[in-house]
Image (cartoon, rainbow, N blue to C red; front, top):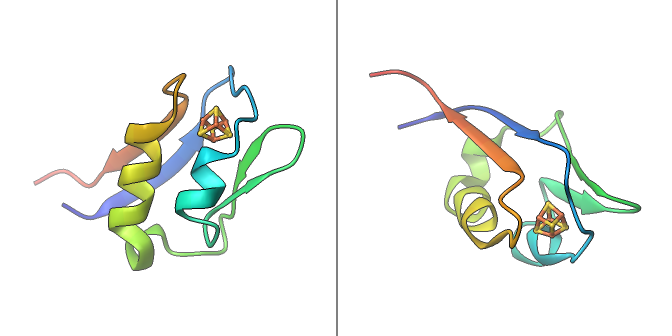
Length: 66
Ligand code: SF4
């Protein structure tokens, strides 16, 4: 399933894991940010892995329906 949107819910602890896994989409400064100019589907496996590996589960990945 294609990714529709990647967003952050509050609670990031700035561990840096998402940026290590997928620096094309995630940047960690004070907290993690998603680069909306990048199509997450070009890095789909890494985005999904980053969401899975986030220790506080604050990376929200929405998929297109069907
Ligand atoms: S993996 Fe989760 S807690 Fe760690 S920097 Fe990324 S969003 Fe924040």
